[in-house]
Image 1 (cartoon, helix red, strand yellow):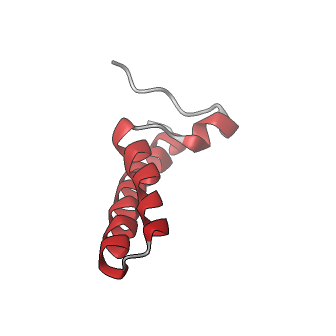
Image 2: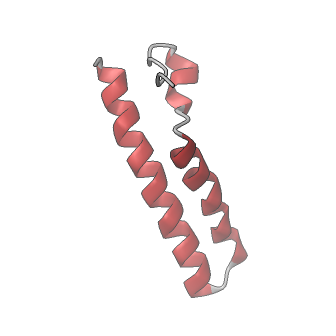
Length: 63
């Protein structure tokens, strides 16, 4: 496991948490812009790493 894989594992959890927090803020405040939290939530659940696009050093998850 290289350092980029460690970053990827952390970022996945971080994106999921940020997505849930933004959606919860949208439900609580009624401001529909917070529902854009669906984007980081889906990206985290699908395990897509935007950093990998730029660095090209992350190893893809074996299916």
